[in-house]
Length: 209
Image (tube, rainbow, N blue to C red):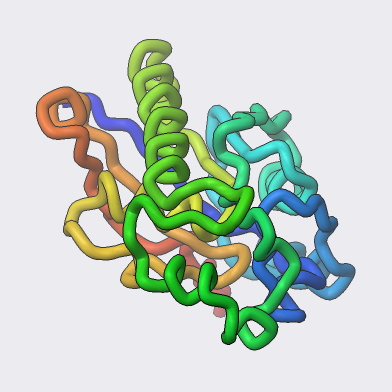
């Protein structure tokens, strides 16, 4: 039976990541060091050739996609934008440690939300709806290989909701520039909305003797 491959890659680092800030909608570019790091990964490891590349509209995702896959024009999916942190945006956990709203949000209830942000449930439903449209479109058009270059929260949500083996979000953490290879079997997707996590990615290139 025909299968489809989707690669998930986390974008490179921004100054917000370096400062340990909650960065959702703030549109930071990649740092120069991160650009160099992604280019080094591309030169020494194997980003696969794919038929289509999807990103969020934010610069850090689009810039990363263009480094990883320069031969592909990124397809922007607005609903792949990172979590809306509301009043927590650009602040650190240390700055928020005495904030009652923050402490309530950290407990992880699906209906909890930062002030003026989105709830955990709203985020999950947004990401899942967008991902399902992408997968259904890939199957319908026969697009065998694709990549999603996006935010850690988005990718971890996809993996926690659809990945086999099943595991919580924390299990699917990934470094910048790295991620996972997914194998989509249409019958399994249609029946159970599940996707096999086949490997990590990119795969190291064997050095020649």
